[in-house]
Length: 183
Image 1: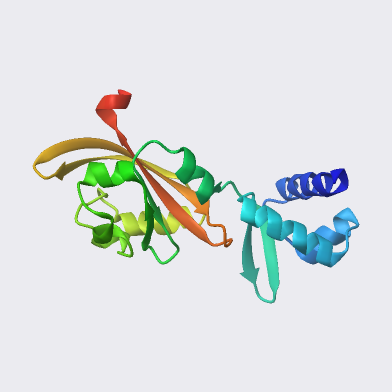
Image 2 (image 1 turned 90 degrees about the horizontal axis):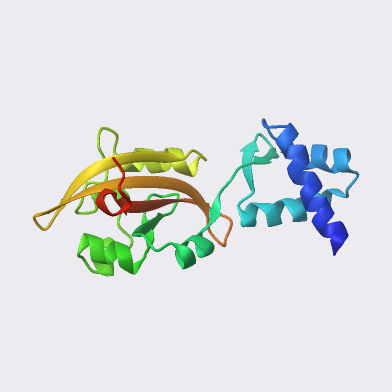
């Protein structure tokens, strides 16, 4: 068991030293691991949200990235939360978001993030921001929304997430600026 954990730590440290990424072959050679073992460990790190994978030609390049696992975020986030998949469709919404937006789940679930009844963007459409976040960046901005004639000053935090399937997504957390005293 400790060899397994040590190998995961060693892979993370190796990828930290190589921010441009490494292939499975390069990782297995550098750490003296069998290629199948290295691939298995990399898949585990991908599901955990620590490693990202991009296809470059025939090789899969792995590099460190910080993504929050969706299941952990949904379980512990007390703020309004919207989860978007890589096709920019809303796939999860917590009760706090439904209460803030004053609409049922059926209105939001499966809709494109740019097509929801409330604009969550300022100069850049939120769909474009989600695309950047799915790529690994984090975004934050403020917006004023009118929901059923009620003005809301919101601080919006977009963060990269990973689903249980290993697919990447975007979490949109909506903070009420008045409650958190954000200027």
